[in-house]
Image 1 (cartoon, rainbow, N blue to C red):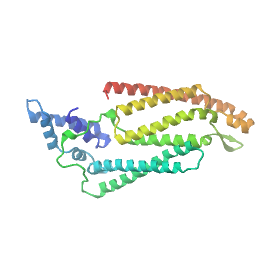
Image 2 (tube, rainbow, N blue to C red):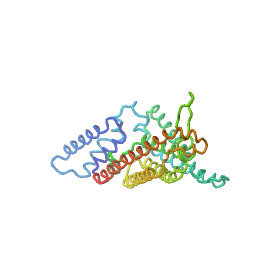
Image 3 (tube, rainbow, N blue to C red):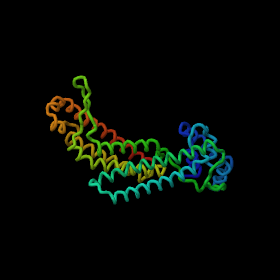
Image 4 (tube, one colour):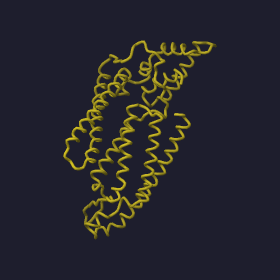
Length: 329
């Protein structure tokens, strides 16, 4: 990976996403033309490229010239300091939350240790979201109400110190990962603490009534594996967020989790129905008899849905493996 590619990548990661690809091509073409004009017919050396990039300007300055000020919350003039402070604050907050929860757990008199351990996850997430929001708000105010640039680097920057270029496939969709973490935490809390609150609604005598839809006996068999999958996925997504990019380890980890999810779905399809009336049959046999056709259809639809998920995940695994092999990570 040459210095021009690293330079373009460093500029690109600071750009508004809408025009990023076009700007990357334009910038790379401009730099290559300038280098060719600079060296003439002789072959360009690393020193020639370094000198050119220094003359052209620091990546944050170039990114700032392309961006429209009202298009971003955190701009180039505070971006480096923002990312550094955010990583430090998140690390401190998450560490203190884990330590505090550990101390609380050590002195807890509760009988269900697994439940108390599981509750640490939303505490960590809540603390991390609060820290992220606080740091982002502070730097957003600095960005929009001060003209002074906050920098953590020396003015005499060296292009040779630029980080490795991040390819399109390695870039992180931050909001997508955060949304995924939120959904997983919601599923963890719902299925572990409130599974009986997942209802099927029906109308009787003009009134809407809900009945618990899940087969608790079947859920108890599948839930430990789902918990392992989801907790591991949360950890992996946090690692990716901290790194700011995908690498070989996180890609392989993601593929392994996808394979594990396929295995779980296959077991759920071949195992007992996750949706049935066993719980209702014990308390209201007549109502269970009336709703049996509805729940039979729902059980079949659930397994069909799991089958569709398996197909989607399977093709996604193939696509990810192909990209790893084709791109060479």
